[in-house]
Image 1 (tube, helix red, strand yellow):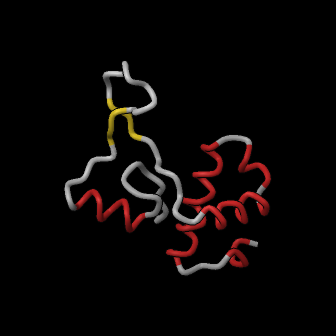
Image 2: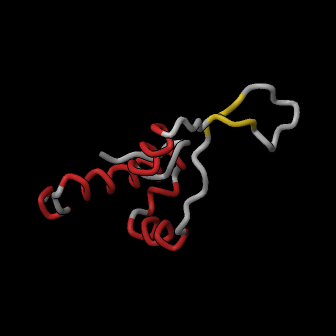
Length: 88
């Protein structure tokens, strides 16, 4: 399982936040007149790891969606017990 959500940047953090009754919905602080809440993925704790990921996958810079998908997919592969070589 791999997850990048407003509750956490990996499956364990997301699950722990969810089971502890936390919400990933918050007021959008950049928009003071915005009345609805939003669920945003928070910045990552290890930006160096993200830079390494982007250098290995230049298309990750095409959109944030692609980057978050790659991060979740990599977590899912690690949690599956498989290695990237198993997919070749």
